[in-house]
Amino acid sequence: MTGYVRREYPQWSWSFSRHQTLVGCERRYFYNYYGSHNGWEFRAAPEAALAYRLKKLSNLYLTLGDALHKSAYGMVERILEGRELPGADVVEEEIRRQLRRVWKSSRDDGDLFRRRPSRVDMLQEFYYQMEISEATLTKINERITLVSQALVASEVWDILAREDVSLVASEQFDTFFIEQTPVYAVPDLLYKSEDGQWTIVDWKTGEEVEDNEDQVALYALYVHEKHGVAPEQIRARLEYLSLGITKETSFTQEGLAEVEKRAKASMAQMRKLLLDPVQNIPRPKIDFALTDARAMCPWCNFYELCQQELGRIVS
Figure 1 (cartoon, one colour):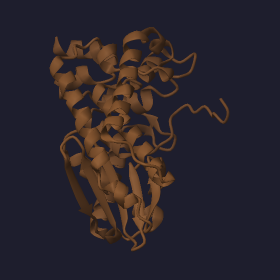
Figure 2 (figure 1 turned 180 degrees about the vertical axis):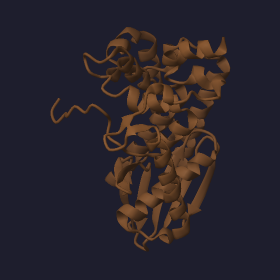
Figure 3 (figure 1 turned 90 degrees about the vertical axis):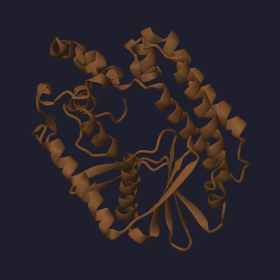
Figure 4 (figure 1 turned 135 degrees about the horizontal axis):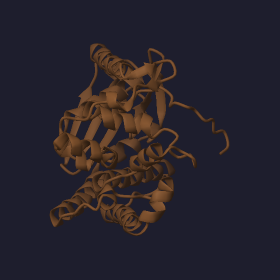
């Protein structure tokens, strides 16, 4: 692999999703960011290889979200090229095609996934042989239609097509730094207008939760730090596509300072779980506590790795 440099331990970084994982379950955090490291190697330790495989699992709702964002990215490209946008029926079929592909892969390619997990899409529901209820399938199908219609109807497309508006980023991975720690930021869409207003757009296919507001606030801090934009010139649009709701948020210097403060507190919590913060060497796995919300464990990607320990705790 050209340019590949093997590291005994992963590089230290921070992101909002990393924080969410830590808050949800320290053991899941360990497997996702440390236990799975180098698990892709041919001679990887069995547990690392298994953790890496399980890390690759998705689920129906995440797959729907991924498909929606691919369609949105395609619409951004059409706007930039001056092409006509697709109708809701076309977007819906694009999303359904993606879900059908992942469903078929999950159903038919289990053996290949176990050998080459980075090359095969696999739904958690199939991997763990979970029953997928008719109610769940009905909900997914209804949501596909709703999010397709809402995405096409979004006023963002008319705004982005204006001559006084320019695209800054779309699904573009980027970083900025908080106290020498690289922080990952991937806004769904970021554009600016000639009057100096910068807008972050984040499309959601699920329910309205407080974490979403915290996530776009971090993106606002990214815009402020990376592009030197005053907080008062940044706004965020959270579009809850399945609900037909759009929420706009503005920011202040004090508010962004609080976002940075919370990020630093999260980093400090993560560092407490390290033996060596410089090399990012984690403490032993046992020091990463299992979540108290045990009812949620069967829906975690890493359930296979925790089953035996959870069984001892229950008994």
